[in-house]
Image 1 (cartoon, rainbow, N blue to C red):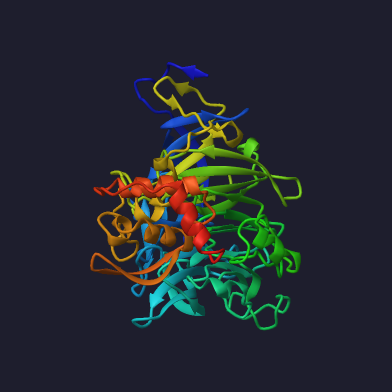
Image 2: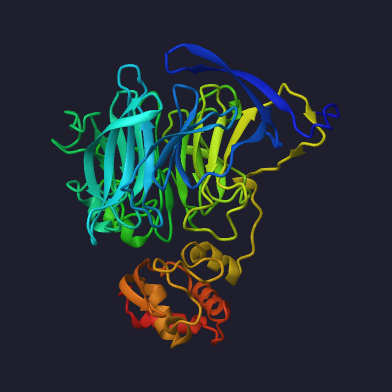
Length: 523
């Protein structure tokens, strides 16, 4: 497969022709020279990996435009586009009133598929309208060359410092679909009169389609928590990716009028409480779920012969999981039959992806966001291209990347450190320092170093509300971890009490069991 020709170059320049539409509507030919940084081998297809853009700042959405540029949103309020061949960036618009903190900001954007007749870009962006109120605006802009004009807010829904979702797409039916988070109001996910925790559906002017499940109501489906991925296929299928709480991140096949269970059902109906709930409620279970959580983000549908092994698959990016996942679908698209994992913790957090008409896949990293542990690297954030190079010669200087199939994953020994990484580090961070004002530290605090029973109760019951830690106020929401076994909780708490500069006694299984028993099922 390898050929020594071109070793002195160190890269292979793949030249392809892309048709690009100019502002005048005339077609021009754009030559793309893409240096291959590495490659990987599927069953029959060799896939090249190239970086097309660096130095970005938390791109939330990347989407392929009709001009064959990649349009993007950055969380700080910038909308722009990138030439995928040269890396040239053009800033289209800057929103001044965007509220950003951890995950709020400028989120999903979408282009109308028929820009000639409907020259619109749709965007989701948080705004703080008072000291206590945050909203999520669903806006429409008119595209005028390389700028946006005539902003119109189609709908304003509750927002929050987290759990906003969200993605926006325009379907083949010309209607607008939005995946909204419940804005940290879990109970509203089951309220069909509240737009939070839903998939919404509306006309491009914000009016409600006559065939929605509820009259004069944008709700299409409900029972979601924080869906950061949404895709519509050409034949009208809808899929979402949804962040779980402490367990059960999900991918869902969305149906009209469907209830996806949050907060009463997580993943599938498998606990005793969930079985009781599902016995008299119509709940649509997830297609796949992950515990420990992986923080699923952008999702897209691959339907191209360019990489045939991925045809009829959902491509999913993950943040905590730091990977691209290929979820092979059944023929009817209603179930997932296999999962392959690529770039596992190689590029850091991966936020979104898009697919070109030629079948090339582009992924974007999110290493400059609020998480920021051991990253960003100097080139972050970046957009990376994956494309078929099976008919090309690959010089010896280009290294092969080895990916893994999920079913081939090695059995990992469960340690206290790995349990902390799986269930705690996404908020409290790997070094236990937390995020000031958002997630409290675990170093030198009374809760951690005090009576072990108080710490155990905190873990078993969770926390919801305002707390003060080391003089800093946190509006804390920590879920209950009572689903963990006594020995797992004991390992985690002993690790916390003996790490990050802490020097406190270990926590035993017997102590966990005693506190659990004393709560008499109240947790």
